[in-house]
Length: 96
Length: 96
Image (cartoon, rainbow over all chains, first blue to last red; front, side):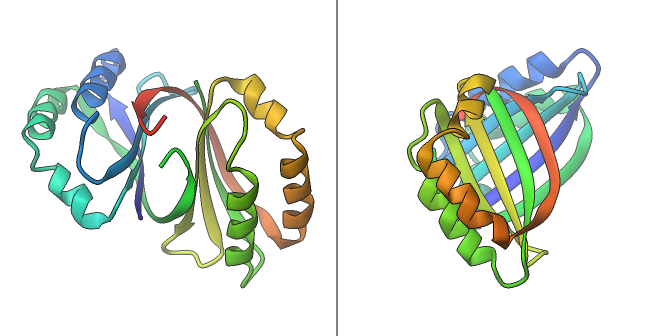
């Protein structure tokens, strides 16, 4: 399985709005086994997103989904940047 | 919800054994919504563990479970160290 862990920075004061967009658009994506959105406890603008997909192809395909494309357009002005992204090979666990 | 993301380093050549112990012991822990074990793609000894718990208390309580305590004893000689650990406030997502 294909894992993605990323730290996204919201524009100041926009984290809650950005989280809402992310959660709304990612509830039903083919091949997505886990998509978890969390707040960083030490940085008021930082969001952690951890994802698990069947494979890299299903992750890429998700970017073409109408809901996801609409969410990206909506979210873009609220995003200040991306601090880190780690790609992993997921082996298993609970919640997949 | 209480999120934990950590990077663990196995002793050289021991990652697969360590992953097996982790997956075996963490399948059924009260309050655990997600416990995902992954290999780092750039470091042959590195393991990423991402966890989501109902709350910090259920995470702490898991360390007293017999299976978890046995696994920690079994895993300890295979662990070279812990490179990072990030605690988050999980807001939602798929696979919880």
